[in-house]
Structures are given as structure tokens and as C-alpha cells.
Image (cartoon, rainbow, N blue to C red; front, side, top):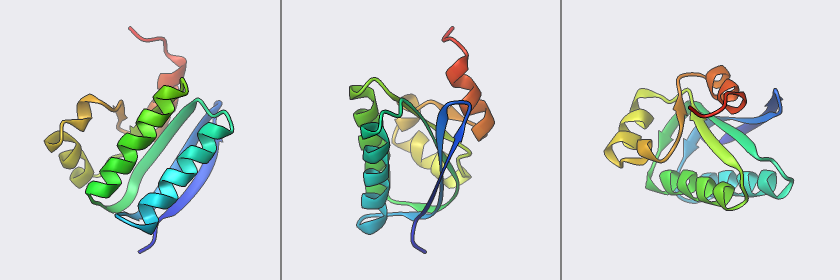
Length: 118
């Protein structure tokens, strides 16, 4: 199943709802291009909703990290929401859970942008 990306805006935050597989090749390139496009357009607050992602390989993880790094270099933030059990396990195994801000749902991730850090 190819990757489907739906873009919406909530409270000034760009939410990308991903559905399908994020794997080496077209899918990871598609996500990388979309993130680059958003950052080039000036988006500074992005949430990736991974609830409908059926499979994420190492290239997909690399794409998430590259998006995070690109965002940080432009003063933007990328947060993850709605992780499946499998993706949550992958982030824990790779220790990427310490890099990304992860939220149980999109609403919590969006709200986190308006809450000042503790």
C-alpha cells in the first residue's frame, strides 16, 4: 500500500496524517519532499499523525529523523502523535523516543505547541 498524506491545519499547527507504508523508495521520498515543502513555505509547527501507518522500515525511520533535523535547523518543530504499538516499539529500540516529542493523540500534540515548556 502506497503512502497517503493528508494535510490539515489546527490552531496554527500543520498536521500530516499518514496512512500506509513508509519504506525505502517512493514512500520515504514522498514524506521527505512533503516535509521539505512545508518547511520551505515557512511552517514551524508540524505534527505527524502515524496512527494509520501500517509499516515503517529503517529508511522510514531515517526519513523521520531527517525531517526532524531539517525542521530544527530552520527553527521549526516536528512532533509525533498516535503511534501504533509497533512504531512505538521501534522508537524505543532505536532510542529515537528520546529525540522526538511523542503524544498519544493529535490533539495533545497540537496543544503542546501552545503550552510553554516546563
